[in-house]
Length: 337
Image (cartoon, rainbow, N blue to C red; front, side, top):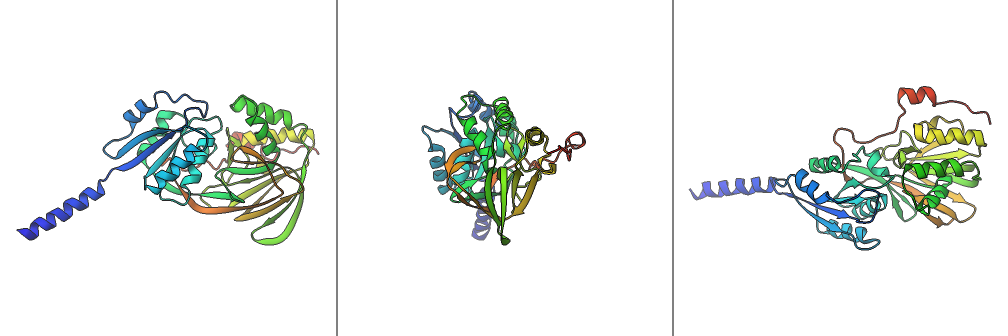
């Protein structure tokens, strides 16, 4: 009888371990992004299965607070930390969760939503919470530019120049970004770069209008700099655009939105696990859309499967291949130099 009791208690304990609730923390930046977060708590109550999850909302109070909170919750072994905000909030949280067992969830509330869009996450708050509730967790790559982690892109040249203007524009959204791209694309002058890959010490000297390294396919706002890039292949895509005239720049701007930039005759794409990039002077540099003035040398490398994320089980990522109509109208169309 005693033996049967111990066996029964063992199986009850084992069953209890199997049904232990997962812990979710929602980190909300009240002032970030372009969407109102009013009603979030009610949506969470209506969507998140309390038989499977315990959850809590925590609001940030100052710049950098999201990173501190995420780091602390990862150290506590929280299962999922959800960033509710724009790209800045998502990136803060993601950097703190990299190389931990805590998964990043995203409720996108920004204007760009680069990582969320690449991961095919809904822009609708309720639908994004439904993805969180499914808790389909995968490992994805991220990358380092010197000591700075990024998840979608980093770059120098035209994209960094536009990112700086966008940050200082006082207006967010796709229309503002598109206007800046079209306006500045007519006058921006190229810079000289020296590039090496991890596979070779051979130096590639280029005069580039734009030089970007993509872990994911897009900057955000469905602007695709590296069509075909994957956050699960252990590779980075370096994309550079040679010095081009104004008609060719118009075609280039179109290609960014049509997922066809890699077919443009003025564009070269290199794939590697790491790149070293040298430029001649300090200038603008962006990582995931955050602009800054940086130095002349960059070591950029992939960190394979270094971040756990809550993914869309129906479609893991958008590699940004053009559809048939986009291919027919835009891919490979030639512009006279």
